[in-house]
Image (tube, rainbow, N blue to C red; front, side):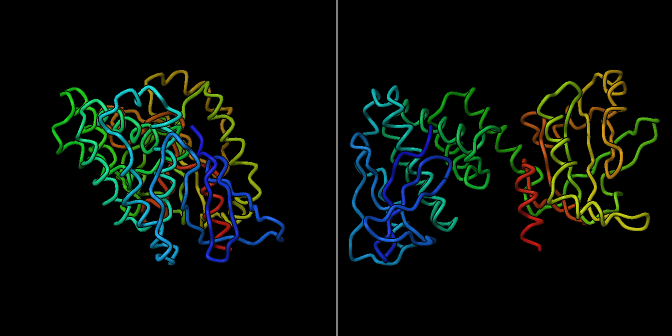
Length: 327
């Protein structure tokens, strides 16, 4: 589901249309293009999902977005369960809503989510549907909107509501447990990894300013693509070049968490060696104890020298952006 064409406005009267995945295109009628930042979504053009107008008296951009987040669902009929099977209405409106939340402080976004779910309690079926949309867009591994911090108030509210069947309650409780593990800003949980020759070491013993913790497996085409992209990244090359015998600026810890150790050993010769540590989880503790929230393979974490998590469940592009911002 893409973000629908939504009108956005600056106080300067320049307009923007959001097309998909947050991409922006400037559109100003018979005027030169403007460099736009700080814009605020004010009107959805989906006639099937009307949203209240933001009063003209509210002129501050952040305040307009906060007001819209509070009232976005005021005209939505939570008791109309036919809307569940109309993704062009409900799901599209939901995507537009979470797009608005991107432009307001966390505390206001959290309040808005909780208030929206409170209103949704009018109908258990609609409540369950909206909870599933939050899971799809904020939690699922392949979602470009994935945001565990904003998913936390969803889980807190859903688990307190008593609105869902027991099996769904258990599912959301498990998700809550997992996203509280290894959160951004916390120290990554230490674990033992085993090298190809059988000797073992610990994550926390790696002496490197930055560590890319890469969970992968053999015969994984996407893993191979990411490995190749890391090695050929024009952004990371100068970072790797600063590695020396006495100092490591960036290290990749490539961990196989699976059980086919023989298959992994046979693949080691094809893996990069310089700047990389290739190892496996001999004790299977990562999987059996769910030490990390590995929703899918591959999964990437990015750590600093103290093994604090800078980026969780991230991508090469986000890691590159981190280093670009340091230049």
